[in-house]
Image 1 (tube, rainbow, N blue to C red):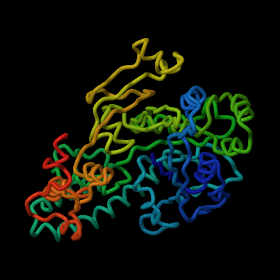
Image 2: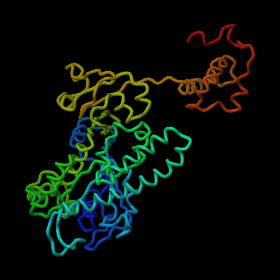
Image 3: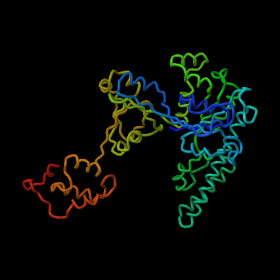
Image 4: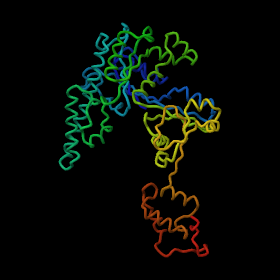
Length: 433
């Protein structure tokens, strides 16, 4: 999961980034545009279930799910026309799954504001307008290229109509996420992800409050929360200054500090929880003596799709999955007891994976590529007389090494002549197969 952080200058973006990533990679200072180059960091997703599974299974290694955070320079009104640092860094977050929009919700005379006064709704409008204009500029460029292709391509002609309708929709001040794609052509659906429209991404509004408002909030944060609800977006309230201070403390003192402010979870946990909910994500686990690992999938995915997150061969050759719910896995001593208690279930291709499932996948992939490896493993090179018919079959299927043809040397080793049965007593050793 990738999350991009945007907002006006001096709203606490870089402070929040440093707090979330437990690093001091982004410069945080009391003047606009102290962040120039984009900052990126990868953090593990804290999950007590993974900790509990690790304590029970005692694997050789534990791998948590991860989240990538990207912090870019603050945007100001007119960034699309070059004001401030412009929108030159927005391309950095076009590949992100969602946007964290940091909004200043505290008063502090010592920290300047680009518009001098605190007004969360005005700040939100400024950022969303700049994101909208950046998307329109990107679409205009794409439309010009598509028009040139439309002269000799029917799909391109349909795409020109779709892009024109989308630009008209956005010129009316509406986000790309509200555009009705049900009436658009398949051509637009095929390039939608490629367009990377910022206003088409889910948004998590993050109200950055002071210490006094961490637990109950304030009027500024309440305004942002209502706006997020009205736009079916995620919302989180944090104090970036306290979050940054937490990173200098050991875990037990972190919990004490949060409790002193009437808060039960850290900002990182809040952001990730809201992010998972906003994007419709959940986690399943694999547990064994070698590894305990958390895997992130979309809610509603079926077992083969979840298996494909581990490896594409798991999805392609999926047979069935052995599933134990997290609660059942922790209740019983081991998998043998889970099986005896009939809480270990065997599920097929239509099973919808639930959050917290502990899963083992059974799969089988036997194609020409695997067949080639089998021949090599059993030392039947192409020049071996008894292997010629099988190597000829590999060659005829034109599927050597995942779709590549045989090398010229291998072709020479496949003579089209009567098969030889030397050393086989008149029988091909392949009769037993």
